[in-house]
Length: 200
Ligand code: SF4
Image 1 (cartoon, rainbow, N blue to C red):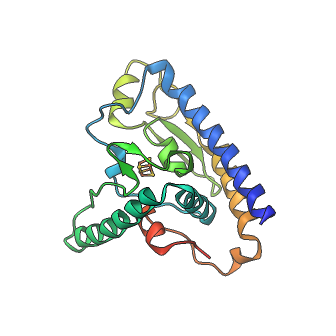
Image 2: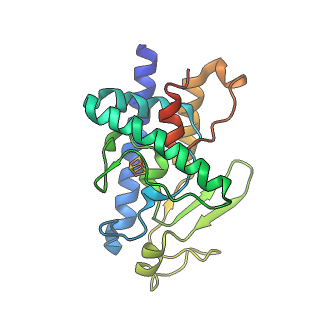
């Protein structure tokens, strides 16, 4: 248990670094998510680590019981609506079950992508590929007059996700230990994680 606590504390410290990197890139442009019509919390996206899954569920366990029940109920509805949309061949646009009145209700435990999305980034992947993303439409518009990062179409202050991803991978490895050899890869929405409960 103490080992898990230490790993969760390491993840929380990494999340602080992500928040700081986000603020450092967003602040010079005055970029915020306030009143954005394209609320990212309605996007269909997956998460890929057991440690973030387990840490988020710790946050849910610590939440007010009425809120936690609401989130779980909404997660079930979300999974059904998402599956129905996929069966129709549509990209799901279903509000995250954690979003309450436009705000993330388990904010301190939200996952990596929730912390980094929107701002431009570059990433040196372990397979040698260099990938880059210009940020969401609002960020791109604000950064339109900024110089490009050399060799990319990415403008403005960017987050280099490489060291953040590396640390997350190391934390995941420490969390899983020998289980890493046998567990399947995680590729789940947050709603699916909530409905399934603790990963192990
Ligand atoms: S966990 Fe929070 S920030 Fe992430 S999609 Fe859900 S409501 Fe939005």
